[in-house]
Length: 348
Length: 159
Image (cartoon, helix red, strand yellow):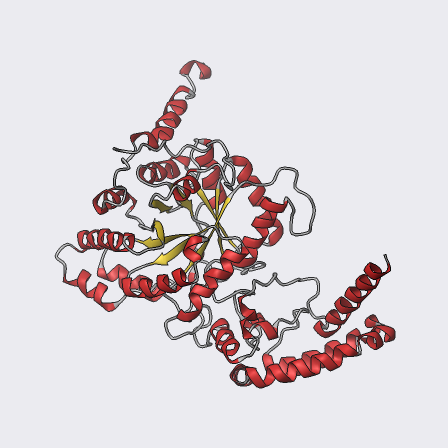
């Protein structure tokens, strides 16, 4: 029997014990394998660019992440993307990086985002400015990811700003964090996850995983500590367009670990792009089998069009159907836009 | 100094013992410091503190010392100002994402914490830095905290 989840429309009625009214929390709490994906923000002021990308991703994903100048490269802001998507009836994951804003700005953004209908917030420290296109920028780093988690949890659960000042209607959000099991110090990584959970993380999305044995070691420690019961772990994956891209990413993107065997496999393939997709599908299938993993987070930079295909081929949705209604928000938006187009007589 | 800072991390355990001993001594005198006037002592103490901790830990005088819960490694040297590190950008060789020639401050902190008796204090999330107390004496801040706690306890007993 196929289970039919409604599309990724913004709000469900709030349930007892839930933090948000969003789809992601519902899916995770119901024990289904969740899928999130990263939306690559456009370098443009045209809302259509955002809508088109979100439409492609929302077909098979439970939530779409609006990245916040990832890699310290300037793009449309995560708040901007969230404003557009929530206006269209779609609730994304707002990413907040501590690199660019101080605590005053961030707390204001949290209230604004929740008011717009954002149900999920991912707390990040952010890459250093030196990795991006404007290394001469001032790095803010007023908070770090852990204190950001604490801040948002205090706002939500105690209805207070950091200062203790009261918030009349607290933001009802599902709070997430990032984890990187593939960077040293390896034995500290599970403890660091515990620290983030203590600070308020309800779900984590990890860095790209290309090393299954390494992930298994990490997950064993995580399970031994019982962390998989306290937090939903979504493992990061992504198709590599070519061996050259993989090498570039390994060298230039902080914290990405790609073993030589993966690069050799891509190099040996006739069609590297196809091999990259196949590899991603296989990784998802292997990750699915690891106990304690609640889902995958797909980061398909400039290959968004393949995301739905990869998910379908991996078979992780099992009896959940790829939802035709999931993109209904987009069709509704198009209709609305067409009907509101200025008629010629307006100009007469 | 980088070399001295790394020496401190390697000797986190003896430094922990030294810290506990001196802190206890210093804070038994809290009423005396308070009597002298914390405001009046501030400048002298801040200067001494900056000199000692600056030399040994590359302390940047954040005003609230957390060395004992970060493996005797000062987190203010993290270029991303993390108070709860390490970040996900640590290089395969354990070096910093921002300054490749420097060992990750938080990898060092973790190594130091493993050497200490109460090193696992590193597992507790720390609040962010208070930018309003930068450059002030962390020792006297602890004194004023202790005095406030004492006063609160007295008041509670009085009721």
